[in-house]
Length: 88
Image (cartoon, rainbow, N blue to C red; front, side, top):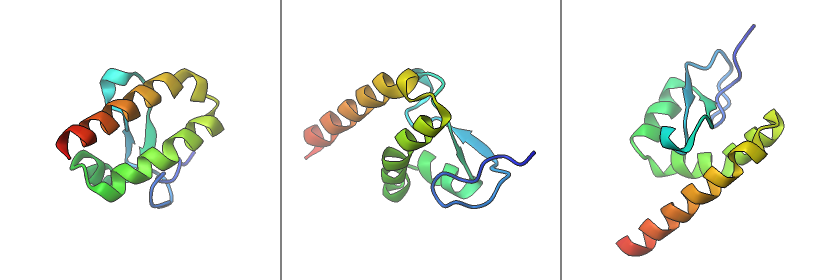
């Protein structure tokens, strides 16, 4: 069975990595990423982070796990917005 394609670029499976877009301390909320997009997310490349923010909730909805991950996602986004405001 092939793994899912990369959530960001759509590169066909098998995806090489499962990635925690919110960081591991926020739980088990992972998404499938290829090696290039996974590395970009870890290096905090703006395009990768913005894609994960936009695409991860839809992925979790399709997987039926959105309710389990919603609070962590919202907390993570709130912290991110706070940090951006402080840095500005």
